[in-house]
Length: 342
Image 1 (cartoon, rainbow, N blue to C red):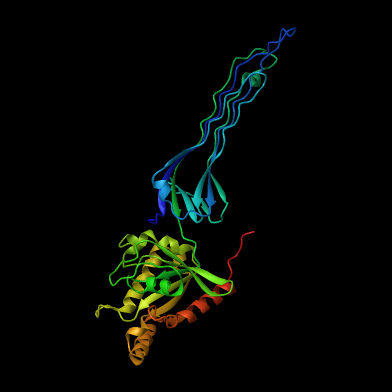
Image 2 (image 1 turned 60 degrees about the vertical axis):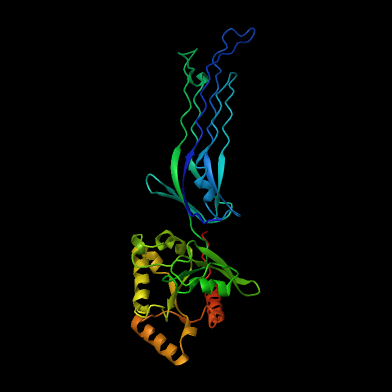
């Protein structure tokens, strides 16, 4: 199924029911008085995070959701029945925005979490609300209030511990294939990855983490160039960024250092918070060069980048260094658990 990570939906809460105009009519009660009840409350619309939904593709087809209206009031002080609330299932990891104001309404990051996005209208008053000492037979009532209507933009952001970052053909898909059961497409041309891929990396009994592979970034991605701008937001949930650098690019004129700097620049343009995440440098494709030349190339890249964080040298094709990398990532995640909000 094609990965769909954004959709526009319209939600409409139910209207409140109209209040009733009614009077008591009982034998031997000549002055019964008003007894019109209030209208029922309109149903509200909620979004609910639900496991088992992986894309927003269904909301490219069905785009409107309406809750039930409240029923009108009745005689004998009977209030109308309230409309049923509507719960719209969403994938876990969905961020909800008001499309008209760009206001962030909520983040459905936990299964079962609900978010009120459109409140139902109040029911109208029946005539029994208007009785007084000087108005014994009121005939006033009010219609129910309209429910809220909203145009929402919903974005699905992948829930992954580790995100892969790099230029096209840096070897991200090859790495995730080597360390997990994910099978993204691998080919010798740019942008073979068109949609985000998730893989579960197991490093031991009850020890695993989720890795996300997004389409490769190019210079200008933060302004919309290439495919990366659509998927940079997925990296915002990750705890570690693995920045893959191809030490032996197929183009002899390509400079791995300049490419790495361009990627960091795009991160800063897109989100300063994203640029501050833990970022490890992964020098990939060490199998393509003799050991001595590989050592010189890696040392030169590190000297020019002046990188201060962890550095690993791997080959996604042969698997060299990948086990050590995954063990280090797992240890870091265990030593820095996610803080749980109280």
